[in-house]
Image (cartoon, rainbow, N blue to C red; front, side, top):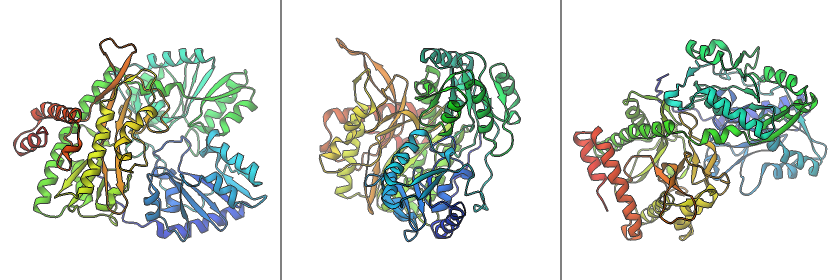
Length: 614
C-alpha cells in the first residue's frame, strides 16, 4: 500500500464552467417539475473527504473547499460557507452565477425560506442528508409554504459526462501490530455496549469506524486510507460487512470470514445501500431497536426501519468514542510517525531556506519538495491532505489549495505550510509559519499572540469531564486582547492511520465532547489578515493523565507529539512570559534530543541553530 502520490495542481478554472453547468441542472429540475435543489458537499457516508466521483458541489460551482452547501433555484443560486472559506469562495465562484454567503450571517434554511415561493417544489437527494441535517429544511418548508421533494434519481447522472468512476481500491489488513487490538475484541466491546444501550443492532455508516472496527484499510478517498462501506452489527452473532469480496486481499478475506458475513453489493451504485436495506427490513420485522448514527446515517434508513416494524434509534455511534481513545500501541505508533515526520520537516525547512537564498521558490515547489522529503522516509503511504502552502495573501486563506493559476513565489514576510503524512503507524498534521526576510512589526505581534495561545493550550491542566469548548478560549485570549480572532476551531481530532479530521473530539466553541485519555487532537490557533498574510502554528497533542500532588480531582493534560522547531525569529520576546519561554525552550530541547540522531551535516547544524533557547 506504500504509494506516495506527488500532488497534482489544477490548471482549470472551474468557475468559468459553472454558469453552463447550473443552467443544465436547472433544465433537469424543470423537467421534474422542481423549482430548486438542495446540494450538500457530501456522499452517502457523510464524510468530510469524498471521492471525486461524489463531489457534485465542486463540479457544479468550482468551489474546492471541504465544506459547503449550495441551493440552486430557478433564477438564484447561493453557496453557504463557514469562516474558513468566505474569502476562498469569493475568489473561486463566478459571482454573476452563484452568490457566496457566510453561514455566520445567513443559514441556508433561512435564505431558502426568504427566497422560495409559496407551493414551490424543492428537491433533494435523501441519500445525501441525515435526519438532523434535513430537519431544519423541513421546518423552513413548514414556515415558508414550500414543499420538499425527495428524489431517488440523481439529477447529475445525465449532465456530468466526464464524471470520474467510483473508487475501487484494494482492501488490506491493518494488523494488530499497528491496531493494538484484534477485531474480535473490538466486536465484543461493541456488542456489550449495544446490550447496555438496549439496542439490537447498530448500522455503522461512518467509514473510518468501519475500517477501525474490522482492522482494514483501503484508498477509496484521496489521502484517507479507508474503504467506503456500510456494516451492520447485531447485539449477538456475526456482523455483516457490505463489500465486494474480490477487493479483499486473501489473508484479510480469510481473517474476516470467521468474524463477519461479507455481503457483496450488486449493481449500481455498488456501495451496499440496497443490501443494507434488505438486512434492515429483515431485522426490523422482529421489532428490533436499531441504532443509527445521527451524524452519518442517510435520512431514509429510519423510515425504512419503522415501516418494517422496528424502532429506529438515532443517536451517537458508540464506535466514535471507542475509536477516538487510542490504545497504547496506537499512541506509540503516533510517536514514531511524528519522529519520522519531524525529520522530514526539518530537512524541508533547511532545504527551503537554502533554496530561497539561491533563487525563487514557489508554493508548488515547496509542496512538492516537502512530499519528497516525506517519501524519502520509505514509509509514507500518502500525504494526509493536500498541502496548504501559502505565501503572502494566499496564507490568509485558512484552507488554501495552491493551483497553477494561484501559485505565488515565496517572498519576504511570512510563509505558511500546513501538511501531514499517512504512515501505517500514525497520521500526522503540522503547520509551521516561517519568517522570510524580516517580517513587519504587525506580523510579529500577531505571530507572538498566536504562539502564546498555542503554548497556553499545550500547558493546560484540566479535570476529567472537561470538554474542548472549555479549553478553546485559552488559544484565543491573546488575540482577543488585540481585537483579533480566527474563524476555525482551535483543534480537531486525528485518527490512527485514518482520517486527519476525526470526531467527536475537538477543541472549539462547538467542541462539547468530553476529552478522554488517549484522544489525539491538533492544537492550531491562527490569525489571518485578508489580502496580506496568514499565521498558524500547529502541533498534535495526546490527552494524558496528570498526577498532581494533593490534587482533589483526577486531572488531565496534553503530551505534545509533533517534533519540529517553531520559528522564533518573528517572536517579540518581551511579549512572552517566563513560563512561556520555559515551555518553548523545553520543547526545542526535546526536538533537538529526539531528532538530532537522525540528522548530520548542514541539516543537523540548522536544527541546532533553530532549537537555541530564547
